Length: 93
Image (cartoon, rainbow, N blue to C red; front, side, top):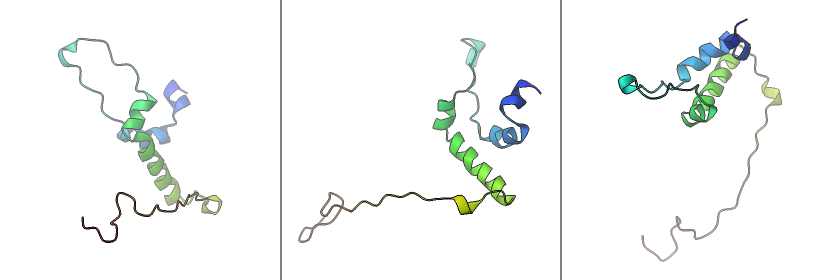
């Protein structure tokens, strides 16, 4: 087993690789070599959310998601009357 397969199985790499941002081009060949990609860079480019959706698509299509154990958490907050975005009676915009 090579190092890549140890940390990222081939089936996951097939989903993730097309989602990764392209490496910036080094003009004139100068400067330091690019270091490995970082989690923060991938997060900023939306890679983690896209990979999550792609994994859900694959697992859902294979019938491998147990929706009986899913839960939704939401918070309801009462709207404040007369806030800056709401029209007030007797006033024109």
